Length: 357
View 1: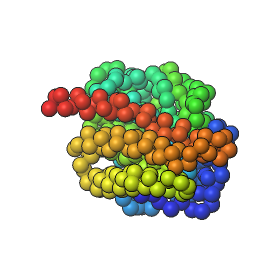
View 2 (view 1 turned 135 degrees about the horizontal axis):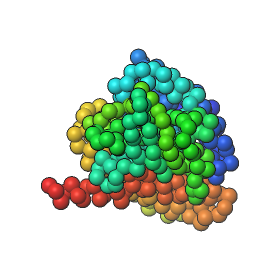
View 3 (view 1 turned 135 degrees about the vertical axis):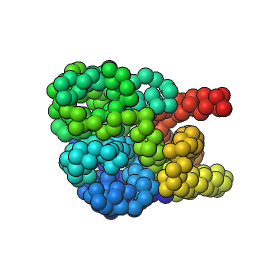
View 4 (view 1 turned 60 degrees about the vertical axis):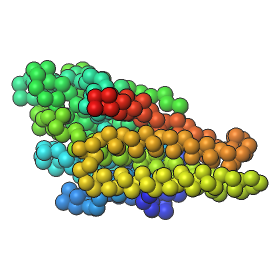
């Protein structure tokens, strides 16, 4: 259910996970290591500079990184999403200009479409507008929470309502666009080395050749499956690691947990298989609700897996040094349900759909 990371990367992530979580490792040191291992290229067509294969390879890579560090996996999620936007854009010239530097990790890619995904599901209005000016566009608005915003080099995708009316568009903005302001890193309770910040857009002017899609409502359903599936990969990797840690604990009475551990492993395997099958078909495009259900289920599994790790470890898990990695995974598990779209938002969408049906 997860790719095998190169030994050097796996060892570095394992040794750095606590420091990454606490913000003691520069975020700019993480993405180049992930890119050097070729992770952003997995599931990308060879013609575009990738290694080919199914999209599930990208999900498995995120899961493998999440086993060691959810913060690093969160960065890989945002970066790989932006890769997918470039793969699926009809704007070939933009893809040719940006994709090589994104795949190599020279420039960071950010998936600033959380607001757009909630807009697509009918949860909230868009927070960005676009107005035609001359041969280009003026962009105004805000993105309150975006990860992988490397201060000295990033591209970020965002959806914008046309002031003149018509379909919503998806545009690519860059760190050095005049009028784009990146905030200081958000004061998260963990996962600090992830270049997570807010963006304010005040009169940002871009040429029309930076439009990823002229019709967001038609284009977003095609990129949403991998957007959500990569988030599922984060949960799969974290849950699998917590179950492994629980399995490794020995002591009186620990065998009583074996049934629960086996059940969760089986559920993880079933969900992974369904995600793989769904990505290889169009089922998640036609029926995104099923993917929402799987992500909700994974958030529950993560919580149960971490609690089983705590029960298996006993009191030592609550001691500062022996329980340090468990404490980090507990913080990471608390993040899984609030990744946008959050579990609450997904449940609201499902409830509304059932009522409408």
